[in-house]
Length: 127
Image (tube, rainbow, N blue to C red; front, side, top):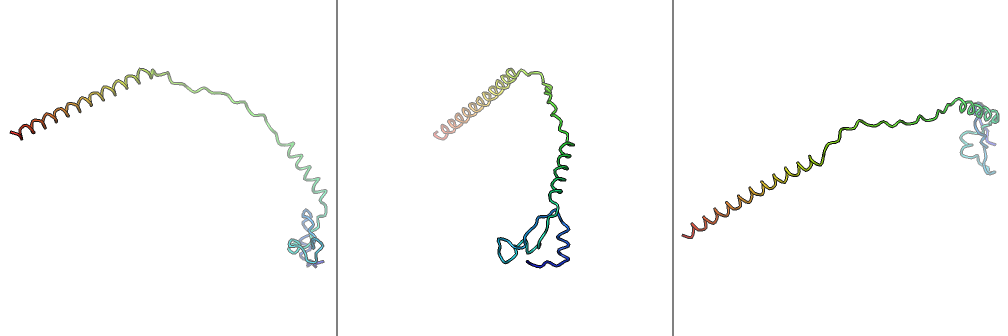
């Protein structure tokens, strides 16, 4: 067995809740990597520690109070009065169509004026 200095052994045995790590593993000659680092740690009273943990956990679960969820209430939003969208949309469409027709009539008139001016210019250049 690997000898562990007395000072280190005192430090390691002061933690009884730790696992016992054998200094050798798989029956080999060399100590395990963890055993090399920690040496041998004895777990002295693990059953008492386990019982104390179970008791503390049980006491905690009894002290926690779970309340049933509060049922949700549906709140209706304040609704705006209905707007007569059909009439307002139709009015908007009529206005846009009227503007479009006026624009097209302006283009048609400009095209006629341009064609007439070009016709006059071509007739004047022939004479």
